[in-house]
Image (cartoon, rainbow, N blue to C red; front, side, top):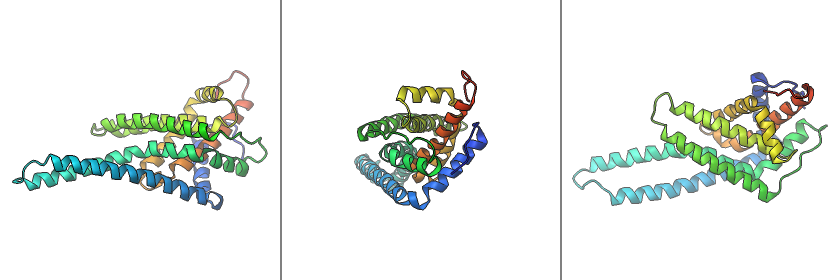
Length: 247
């Protein structure tokens, strides 16, 4: 069991991230991890298949000219490269969708392993978990489409990606973890009281999303990370004088 965290900050967030990474590749998590990766890859594969079919149809029906085959080839190459960039920006919403499916199983495993002395969280209904996952995926899709529009603006593209996803991943994963112990309105209020900590943890999750291959771990990593962050801020709030906000 990891030690109780009475204060939250960069060091504690990093420790929580390291603990989460270790947990999701541990034997108890391994089967769930493989299923999560498989589901993520399957959804991305279906999206890729659909988009490539649409792209091929569009380019085939808009060939420049039979006398300019080099330009046609270049158009296919540029469009294919753009499709790869677009698919990378779709990983956060796909991960969000998958996380709703595995939320309670992953959170319960972390709670039992690292916080056995605490009261267990209450599992969300399957419908509610999927609803949160769909909401998360929808918001993530909108935000990442906006970030994609800024992709070709130097100095703004990566900053927009990390700020947008840091905020969204932190908010949604934290509220999912906190909702196992309190109504959603209280989970949201708790996040707002600890917005700096939650955003910092969200930036860590966004960093994982930005790393190829490693980003396939995002659904379980995000859940495990925010279980630790939730426990940390909960204990910090209990230890702090009444009326004091924990940042």
